[in-house]
Image 1 (cartoon, helix red, strand yellow):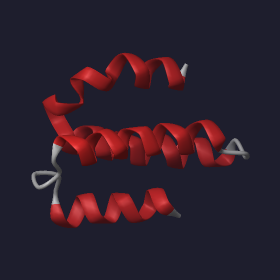
Image 2 (spheres, helix red, strand yellow; image 1 turned 30 degrees about the vertical axis):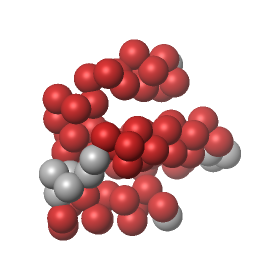
Image 3 (tube, one colour; image 1 turned 180 degrees about the vertical axis):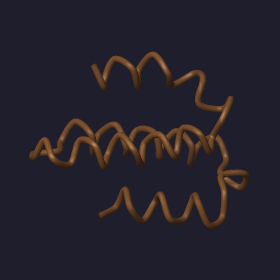
Image 4 (cartoon, one colour; image 1 turned 90 degrees about the horizontal axis):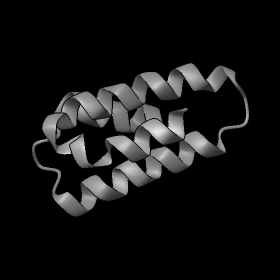
Length: 73
């Protein structure tokens, strides 16, 4: 539910106003939620919404990519 809310905020308002600290907290929170998911049915929803956040951040997500890829694997 939180991921859906984050997705809607990013889609409606964009990611241009997200500063570096909030960006870091957002990525960490998403990674934590992904790791803590219980049902495999949620995995597709999490990955899709994670992709929306990553695409919205664009080049700013580059420092987090190794950690993101390691978590998803």
